[in-house]
Image 1 (cartoon, rainbow, N blue to C red):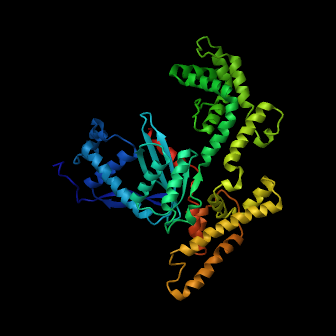
Image 2: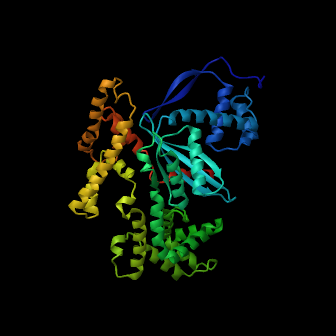
Length: 488
């Protein structure tokens, strides 16, 4: 009987959760048992919680189901795998219907696993019809190599599979192969009707990667003291007995912090900062640990103190001022960091203007933000400030004119041919009206997407620009995090 059981017509009252405007409520509704719904829910649990398919054949799970619903017998792992693939197919089809009407901003990253397999992750970013920011993994696959043309073909094929022909930017790190990837996509897609300004702003460099390169350049000057701190942290974390001994030293020193010492990650400078910050908190505990006869790390207490003094002295440095210091060590370190900064961000023309347009389309900033930064932060004179802000204004005007020319929104363009010229004239003044409108006050509670949602009828074309431009990711973190999730 249990094998044939698919459900019962008898209804039972049950609470059903409902979310509205971020709030969760529960309604009492009549419900009937459905074996098909249970199969689908179980498959979703397997996917969401990253459980093995064999989970459904575990004795504990079977006993649980016998208590919850003794008349239902779950399928085995092979059927469960098929159910998961069916859900994947359904979700992909639903997502296809959404993204085919969107202009996406892409991020991509590659990774080599411990098995020496090359992986690529492609993520799409967009703002949906309800003005909610969305990011979706479009592909996670093995690639033959990390060559630019190979990656370009893989990205192109993925976009074709999804039916995506409209994309604004591609955010990548500074690997040389990524420049070839961008060149390949630009070459293959720049002449499409949906391409904005011949992909002039296609390439967005990952800001987090550039920042990491700049900081790493400076950290080279204090590699030795950082290495000594890293070694003692690794020593403490290497076994439960050493960690217990360390916590004993912490207690004896009266240190109230109970956060575990952390190791850094070579590709993320902020993890080095977290390691040093945490280690400085436990400096006295590390000193006491060095005095212990059972301490087997070949380092003296004086060396640990010296290492902490070195890294502590670098906190809160001003790179510009350090470039002018008489201390040769600090001068060389700051100069290397400044050169690395200038390589990517030192010249105004090296920065993708789309990122500046995103600032202009933030109601709290607009063009005035750049005028303030150029004049007060960078110290430019009035003439230079005027030239740079005019450059930004001209750039966003060219972008706006492309949207005016290619906009197919029925709310903007009249369906009657004799109204077309009049509509275009109104559109051309729309950007100007937005730019001269008073800026919003800077507040953490201000939601720029909500503002555009409420004012999309007032600025129909500029709001479409904002919807595309504000979706641009400034880093590849969205794609990188996928590798951390799957643990390859």
